[in-house]
Length: 175
Image (tube, rainbow, N blue to C red; front, side):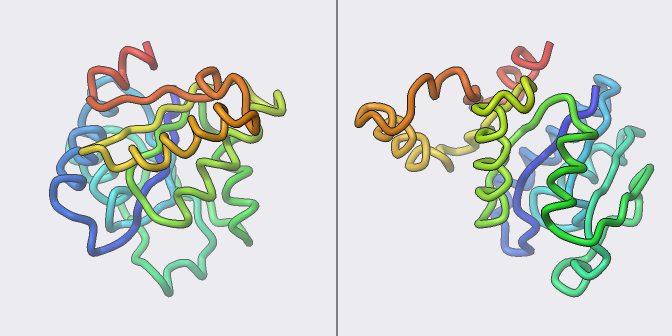
């Protein structure tokens, strides 16, 4: 199974999140799942990839070559696909993944998350989407999404994605 991770590439990501990302990568490798990610070597992406690679797992990095000007790219990927744009990158994530895990991140992560749930809402895929709410990182966003539902702007939001606060929950959803 190919699992796409959306998450921070920031060098300033706090240790509590990096440790969880590393453990996620380790567990993906143990399950013989392939990590699909943005190819970054830092932040949540880098920590998860390190967990995969340290445990002899496989990974597929997908990124435009120019993104290396902003963050270092992971050199240990089993395979790397270079694309021309961020839109093409997101299309390749969808094409090459069986499920999505949204870990803590910034604007790029939110962009990826909202696009993938929008595509699910529009029946463009039926792949599992899991928000990994480490240390209550996404509580405010989840509250906002619930409020959108309560006010009639969104319905059946509980069918679009799952929320996990532990690795065990993530793998229950994936199994």
